[in-house]
Image 1 (cartoon, one colour):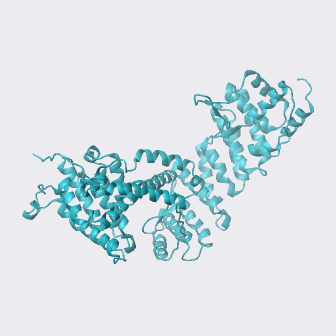
Image 2 (cartoon, rainbow, N blue to C red):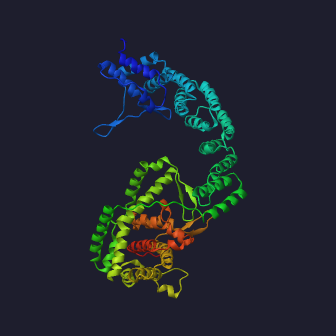
Image 3 (cartoon, rainbow, N blue to C red):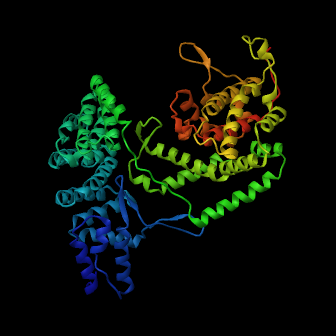
Amino acid sequence: MKENPKEVQSFYSSMENLKSLNIWNIQKELETIENLDVDWKNKIVVERKILTYNINNGRLINNAQTTDIKGNINKAEFTVKEIDYIKQRINQTENTFLISRYAHLIWQIEKHNDYAEISILNYIKTINKVKANEARELPILLSALFYISKKTKIGIIEIQKFTLNLTNEVPDWFKSSILDAILENNILSSEQLKNIAIDLPTWVENENPTSYFHNKTTLNTGIKLYKKFNMPTKKLYELLSKNEDLILNQHQKDNDFIKLQTLGDKAKYLREAGKNVEAESILKEYNRLKQTVKLGKFNWELGEKETQLFNEYLKKYSEIILKLPTEKILAYFSINEDILVDPTENETYSKQTIKNSIQNLFSLSVFDINSNHKHLEESEKIVREINKNYTLSHTTKCFSLFLKVIIEGIWSGKINYYKIYDFLEKHTWYGLKFQRGMTANEIDKNSTWLSMLAPGIHSLFAQFELSILMNTNKVNNFILALDSLTLKFEGALRDFIRLAGGNTSTSRRGGEIREQLLEELLDNEITKEYFSQKDIALFKYTFTNINQGKNIRNSIAHSFYQFSDYHYQPALLVFFCTLRLGKYTFQEKTSS
């Protein structure tokens, strides 16, 4: 090789004396050079190309990719000449990190084990150098070491000894990171891994407040490891419960939701540890705190311009709808599919938004209607996003328009209980008489589903008209309407399936036969045959916890709602669903 120009010498020197192994920091340390001839410029390009690779699960993966005119991904491939240059560099540099990377790359391309051996040797040398300075890079380098050794069967015994020694040398707070790297591409024997599992509880630092998160990570990893070897996990759960004390000591006020959340976790861990008496004591305190805890509220509103545009949209479309006769107004909201959220589109959009969301960087906890908290898994975050986007789309696209039309319709006299009853009797299956069953008496033969729905609808619109026309109903009073219509919806759906020739019974273990629950009814074959996907999604969103929906049916049935929960919005939403359910028709089928 001809003598290097000064600028190139300076560049190679900066590579030789790298102080960091972090790719971002390396780019800052490299010397910049200009005005080189083509040959030298190409060599520098190769060096920079190599540094665009990151170690991912032990493999060197190119971090800089582009797409061609057809959208195909272009990979940073190396030419034969460039590969020859990289091989020369292995013999020229004394930087073990560079050697390990060059050799690793050549091994991935050519699968020659000579380069795998060079890479393994220099990864070990590099790890020994950076133990204290850049500990965060250790698991990344180890993953490459394990991956190459596992694939080639080279140096396994030496790497096993090296890994065990390293695990003993690093601080306790960092050992779980080493263990994670081991488990990704495990080359340890079962006996060696089991010995690590036995030693793992000693890594926990229960007296140091700053150790909370690494303690939790260590113990959760340990639980997976213990289950692998069928080892009892109670001791680890007991340590997890004790670890929660580090948080409780810092959050002692009864109105602090972190205290409530931590007590819930502690009780859960105590149960798993077999400490049922202690867990029950913690749960009593947990339930007491649910009455005192305070959560901050975040409120977001449309800007002035956006609010104006939205109101203009509602005004324009509500005026068009209100020009129709009453039965066509109700038919519009019963039949029109365009106003409903498409569940498939919503799910696709939600998965994309959660992928790009900052939520992926944080743990997320939610509270249910009874103030019980839950830590969300990644899959549950997606479900929550689906629900959030459904709520937003349904509110803006459908429910706001429905509410606007109902209010204006009441003002104009086009909508009231009597006109709604008349519409349901003439244009829905609710007005049909049918045989109730073996237990029906004479009075049931003359009743219809409208007889069952009428009291709830009457209560809803009587209260709503008072609120709008007379402004006398200043306190929410939709308890009877919401309770009645919610429970009657499930019964109406059940009878629809029966009348259409479907089955609403299911068997449990042991042969016991019972009626399907609402969630099962919404997935019934008849439901899927007759109802649109949009309607089924609306019903699930309103009545169940599927995709973390409003779960109104469960909250009503178990009396979870408080007085303030009984307002006109959920009542009108349930009425809207009742309208949608009534539009379907069927040919009544009877059993032989």
